[in-house]
Structures are given as structure tokens and as C-alpha cells.
Image (cartoon, rainbow, N blue to C red; front, side, top):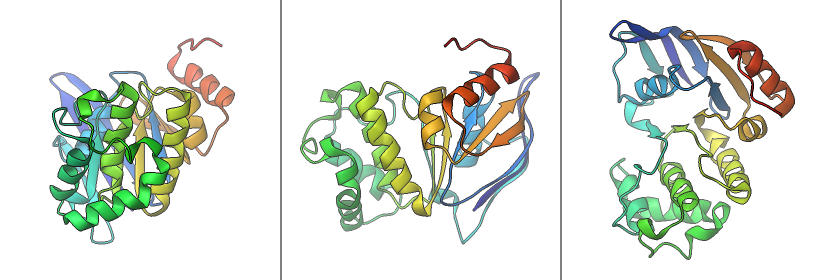
Length: 230
């Protein structure tokens, strides 16, 4: 388990997080929902240690260390494009303290959940499609021994086939870890999330278990006063 306790963060006069407190449970996929600019990425960055909060703390249990937390940001900047798929996977595992043998064992453990990974290991990352790059970024976190994986816009750029692959991969990898998502893909998160948290005005204002897509969109529109269409 991991707890954020009274986290606050401001940028100049703009306070984006106001006393966020929450327990993230192992075995759960928790999704934070809010419009762009609401502080989702800021919170993930604080948990990962990329940002320092103005106040508050992040507590790790079960002898966790900050290095046990891994973040995958949105976009394509999570990979070394001139390296092969396998070189990327080995690099990200080794810099997190794993031995090469451990990395290769974890690739074998999870590769059936990402069908293209076997034949693509010798391919340069820059030669992959955008969706494959996105899945590889997430896979590079999953094959580490990180106990908490946070993913910003997990399904960004994925077609239906790859989104379904990612759902299965996340569910499998969440069995013994904390998984935290920040996403605007309501259909995706409604199917994969165990907990859904709405972030508004710098606070967690509402929490739900699994919600069907129509109810999730309805509640989002009510909370943020936006029209998501049909």
C-alpha cells in the first residue's frame, strides 16, 4: 500500500493540489479523472519523486523505497528511439537495479500479453507504430520490479485491438502492485479500473468503484460542467 498525505502544490499563484490524502491499495487499478490542467500529472510526478510538494508526504509501506515507483508519461518521450526494443527493455530494467537475467525472465513472463514484443525485439523503437511505442513504454515499466506503476494517458493513440491488449496486460500486472492511471479515455477506464476518483479544484471530491461507461460520463459531465457528447 502507498499513502499520499495532505499533498499540496502551487505554481506561482495557482494552487493545483490542496491537501490530497488517499490510500492506494495493492491489487487495484485506480484512475484519477479530471480535465487537462487539473493537477493529475502533477500528483503522479510528486508520487514518483519527479516533483517536490509544497507540503505533505508520500508514505510507502512493506519496505518500499522511492525507486519502487515507476511513472510512464504521455507521449513518445519514454523510449530511446535509436535503440532496439530489447535494448530499451534491458536499459529500463537495469537502471532500476535489476540483473539482465531478471529482466529477460520478466519479458518471458509477460510477453504473451503483448503479442508483437517477441518478433519486434531486434527492431529499432523509431520503426514501431505509435501504438506499439506506447505499449512498449508501458511494458518497459511492467517488466521491472516496480511495486507502483503510474501511467499518464495509458491508452493514448491505441486502436481498439491494442487498447484491449493493454487492459489484459494491466490487469495481469496489477495482481501484486499498485497501478495508478490518469486518463481521458472514459471507455477504457470504465472497463479496467477498480477505483475511480474525481479530482476537482485541487481535491479528491468523489470516489467510485467500477462504473459503466454511461454512468461514468454522466457523472463527469455533472461534476465538471462539460458536454462529452453521445
